Image (cartoon, rainbow, N blue to C red; front, side):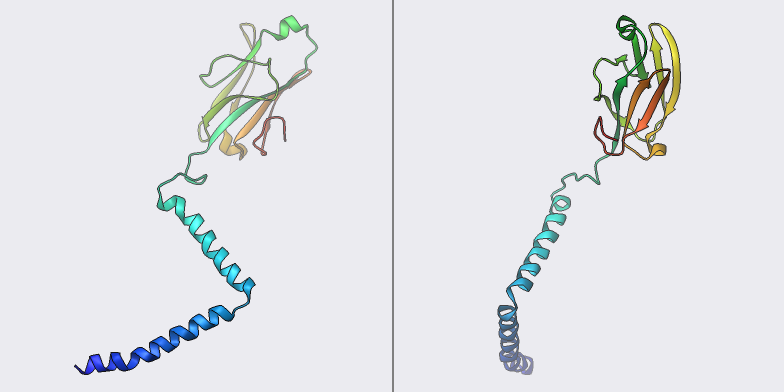
Amino acid sequence: MPSILIVWRCFPLILIDRLRLEYRLRTMPVTIRHMAAMLFALTVLLVLPHACGQKTAATTAATGSVCTGIFTAFTPSAENRRVYMTVGDSEKIYFNHRETVVLDNLDLHKTYIVRIFDGNKQTDTWKLRFDRLKVHMVTIWRSPGYWHMDPNPSGKCGER
C-alpha cells in the first residue's frame, strides 16, 4: 500500500517533467527540429533494407566485367574480322562492337586466362585477376602492334 502512495505522489512530478520536455521541444528552433527529424528518417532508411531482408550493394557479391575497346591495327578489314579473344572458358568474343561490355558476372578472386586469336592461331595471352587490379571492369583493346588491358575504375565502358 505505501508503494502505491509513492507512485501516486510521484505521478504529478512525472507529468510535470513530461510537460517540460514537450515545452522544450516546441520552443526549439525549427531548424533543430527538422535536423532531428531528418536524422531519424535517415536512420530508418538505412536500417529498413536490413530489417526487411533486402540485399544492398554491400551485401551483394561483386562481379567483374570485360569491355572491348578500340581496335586499331594496320591490317585489311577482312583480316580484322578473324581476330577474337576468349576469357577463361568463354565463347569467342569478336571486336566488332567497341566500348561494349562483352562479358560480365566474372568472379573477382579467380584467375582468368585471356587469349587473343587471329583465325586459328593464338597470338597473345595473359592473366586477368580483378582483385589484384583493384577494379571490377577492364577494357581490352589494340593499338598498332600491341594488345592492352586497362583497368576501368569508373565502372563504365569507354571511360577511364
